[in-house]
Length: 236
Image 1 (cartoon, rainbow, N blue to C red):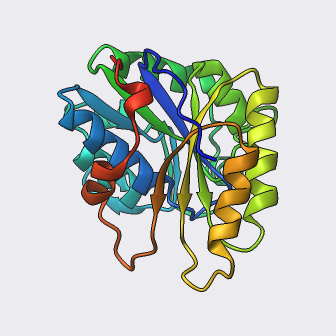
Image 2 (tube, rainbow, N blue to C red):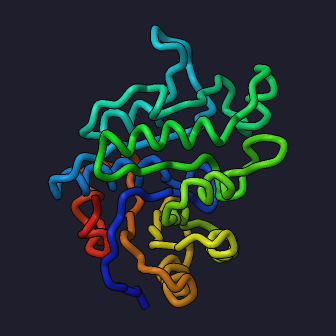
């Protein structure tokens, strides 16, 4: 059963996932388009990106470029993406290998700067919810520091039930609200997909705001039109 709780005022949202490669950037961009269509000034943020190519601006990460393109507010790249590393590996290792350390205070400063430019800031995490960011802190610590409600993107494939339920438990254990979840069908060959979606709807105790069918090249604008964001209708 999909829950449809009453709306609440939203100034930002933290998008996390059950793993890497489950569609967090796709959902982030779809949310940006959806809120923009409602007349909101929106900007996306990817605080930490790993996997980049050099260009005139320093490093170019494809997810960051997609988020910049989906935002309707022009914001400094340094605020949208404070940390960008070349190798596509765990961020704390990428940072260590370059002699850097990911500082959550710096990310929080950047986020606060974006809140002065937009009505709604959509923050995309890196990997799953508990990915290490430095020797002491992880992505869950970042979400808690920003104090944002969390949207969980579930990559619908074998093993997703355990991953989704553990992530939901971790979100709530941090004292954060699980504002909703998305079922993203990343594996077109998944057996019993309907039953898996139903199992999560019964157990996550949060609204499913979208179910994204598999597509070789998914379109965030098309997905935006199908998002159930009525709960966030009073955003900004």
